[in-house]
Image (cartoon, rainbow, N blue to C red):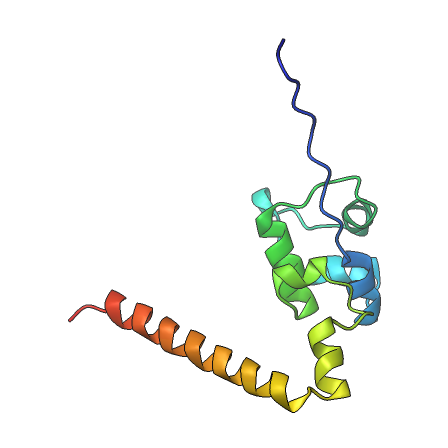
Length: 123
């Protein structure tokens, strides 16, 4: 018996929320996007289809939308109206013992990243 592969469910995005946070209409956001292949402009109807999940967004589209909104492409998948747990921790204050542990971990990762970068540089 052959297993059928179902289409993947699209990852929920927050395009509409980001657009509204930036106080843009669908047309204003469309006007900020570069022309598509063939030089055709993106219209507000296309923005609406993306927002409603009726059309998928390629990586190029995600990048263009993010640039137009002044965010990174991964931010499209984060609700702009809710704070992350890291933001909440920073606002509420990090307990000293956790702050020390985090500081040590960041330092370790920075050193490790520098070592990796140094190895990749031509001599």
